[in-house]
Image 1 (cartoon, rainbow, N blue to C red):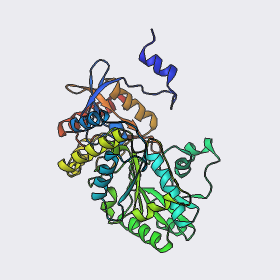
Image 2 (spheres, rainbow, N blue to C red):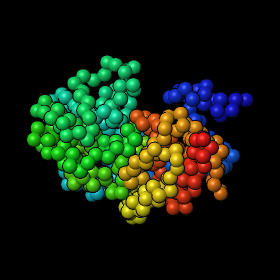
Image 3 (cartoon, one colour):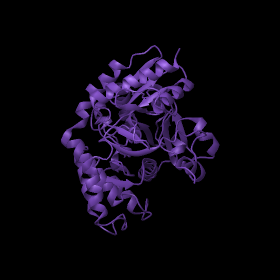
Image 4 (cartoon, rainbow, N blue to C red):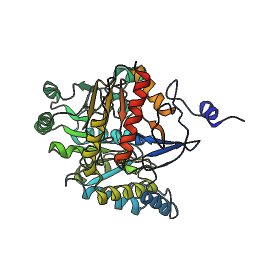
Length: 404
């Protein structure tokens, strides 16, 4: 009989030549358990998905309750579904008044696609600007925005009239003109290795969009829901986007994305043509119930207020001769080593149990698409100080083994 690893290799499409294939049997809080029930501290959180931790009791209860009532019915007005309505209201209550209308999608990439269409529809313009080293998803439109030619090139031709500019560069702002429908950028560049723009650049970007009539689309698919130390990353820059993109943590562990704008702007998708943007499963009631429960936990416990202290604990402990630099924005951290090969060796030592600490067999971590010489740390926001301390010890032990 074939093992699950063999079945995985035979029947699941690969995304890399050598997938890690970590055998997860269960998860709770910030801990993953392998098929031998060994505990590993999760420093990835599903890539910024499990902000309130794995299997939070409130989220699990909401999923069970909604699953017992109804699953898929039909989305977008033909059937009024309470989980969608109540979650959209809760989101709007946490956002500026100009971001009061939610279009739920299946994923962050689909939110990007919807926002691109909305920007073209509202402005009657075709040019879209994105930044080098940006990541917005892998669908054709989102891939056209993705800021790295290595990942784009094999799938050309992509969308026309896409321009890429330098992130956090004042000269780049001149490329935003009267023919620009929108500029799409991450509030903090994640896959670039945690690159946060300056306050003055973000302010100037907002002004330039206002001057030219271009829409500002902020992608908070990875940084949203408290990860940077505020509920929304853009709060730290004192600006408000015209369209906000959400995903990952939006569903509390279930698949869900959204693009959010004003109610007035969203009306453009309802006519000329009717059904200007449609989806079958976007805003699935179980996903919305789970996401609403997760956001309620976030708000009640104000988890973002714990982020700065946890960030500083990581920074204080991540001291090693192998570390070239540590970049952080809240609990989004990049540990820069000398090479991708070294990163892979350290990750391997952590996940194979070659480094351990007390009850923990290792840690589960990863690297960045456009900063492959960096180890990624984006744990659940609920990770404890004790878990952070153990995780850092394991990482440093792994570096000791790898670096002579």
